[in-house]
Structure formats: C-alpha cells, structure tokens
Amino acid sequence: MKKIAICFSHRGQEIIERINRASAARGVDGLLPFFKWESPEEPPGFTRVADSLRTWTKQHFQAGNALIFVGAAGIAVRALSGLPSDKFSDSPVLVIDDNGSFVIPLLSGHAGGANKLAVILAELLHAIPVITTSTDVNRTFSADTFAAEERLTIVNREAVKQVSAKAVEGKSVTISVKHYPPDRPVDVIVADETDAEYTLLMKPKRYTVGLGMKKGRDPEALEAFVLRTLSEAGLSAEDVYALCTLDLKEKEPAIVSLRDKYRIPLLSFDKELLKKAEGPFTASDFVEKTVGVDNVCERAAVLGAGAGAELILHKKASGGMTIAIAKRR
Image (tube, rainbow, N blue to C red; front, side, top):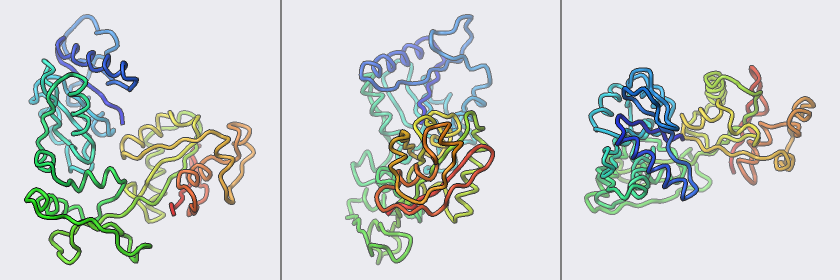
C-alpha cells in the first residue's frame, strides 16, 4: 500500500518533509508528496496536482492507497464525498493539521490500518494521534483488527458491531477454533456460537495466487484476469492469502496495483528458490530462457502456500499474463 500525502500550504509542505526526514532516519519508506496551491515553483520532490482535488482523491482512493491530507479536515471530507462504501473496503484516510499537532484517522481505522498509521505518524511528528473508534478508546477487543492481523476473512460482517459492542460493555468475548479440519468453510468463531446475536464467523485465507507476465502489462487487464480466474474457481479476492511471483516481477505496476487495491501481501522469490518448488509443473523453454526458470506462476503459488500445498489450478495464460492457484495446507 502506498502512503500518499497532499498539502495545501507551505506549512503543510514542512509537515510532510518532517515526516519523510524522520522516516529516512529510521530507514523506512516515507510519504509520496503532492501539493495543490497556486505557486510558480514546485517544492523540491513534490508533485503538483493539476486536476481537481476530487479527481485526484478518487484516483488514489480507488487504487487502495493510504491518503494523508495535511490541512483542514473539511477539505478531506469534501474531497471524499461519495467515495466511501464500507469499513472493510475503504482506503485508509488521515488528516494532519498544518501545525503538525494532531493526526486524525478518518476512514478504515481497523481493516485498512489507519489507526496504526496515525500512531506511527504522530510519533514521527511528536504529535497527538486522535483515535475515535470505540474499541480503541475503551481498550477492548476489536474483531476487525483481529481479522486483519490474523489474515482471516469475516463471513458475517454484520456481526462485527454486536461483538464489538459486547466487548466495549465489558462482557467477555470468547475466541475458539472448532472442528479442525473444519466441517464447513469456517473454523474461527468469535464469541459464543450458541448465541446467534454475538457470533462472528471467520475463515482463514487459504489460497495463494501465482503470477507471471511480460513486462508492462496493463493493471486493469491483470485485475480482470485474476478476478475472472478466481470466480471460475469459486473464489474471490478475499480468499487470497498472498500474491506470489518472481522477484524480477515484484515491481511491475500491474502487480503492485493489484496488491494495493485488494490489500493482499505480495511474496516474491528468486529463480533459485522457484527451482526448488516440488510438483508437476507446466514447463516452458521460452520462460526458462527469459528468466532462468521453466515456470513462474505455478512454482510461485506453491512456494507461497508453504509445506503441503496443493496446486488446484495449473497455469492459465492470457495476453502475456499467467496465473496459477495453490491451496494452503
């Protein structure tokens, strides 16, 4: 996920520069800086937003990037109008005042990690993180945070509110694993399954998607190809534990876009590791001559799935892209 910041004044520019200096000192990635105000000169390292703020916000929000507005909260609220849909799919959005005193997560505090990002940015700025989500301020169990951290899919999302409310009220919340291997596609139960009102069902993300491609494939084409292939296999993006590919392909814009938009971790392997994957793979002399290993998508999917992996979809090709799906043990 890219962390993109936009400012509207020189004071906002200074805040972003402070964050990036502090990030560099710690050896971590900083923010991608943008600015939008009338100025004949561009601040060094910043990109001018020529389009409307609304257009710019829509582009990056729909791409799954974390957006940090440095300025008044009202600017962010107006720019986001009509874009948010639900807490599980919204991109994380934060606001920092241009004095650098407060960092406020507005959207996707738990599922998108905006609350954690707010704490990190506040630490870099020596500011105050303003967290408003009920489970955080009451220091109680958060079901959606638990699901995100443990790479679980929430089956019945409507129950999150009930379980969170129960935790906030000080009532006990039980986490249990039932029937391993499960007798249904759910094996994590939060709260008491005898009490329907407070039962939240979760399931592990059991599948890895291996990807191979020629250079410069279109991000929308890859997204459509992956989603179509998953659907044909009876799966969705929420079932995917990781995207897997050759290390030479990990920075391909199409793969990075898919990773960011659907918040799926990306695992990459060098050719020597791919060669060590075990299984009946679809070999290609052309691929071996090009990248040094006879198959990328199948081998990557199996390696990403770990010991005991089962290749459930062998190599499928379309428009210079290949995909394979493996099931984790």
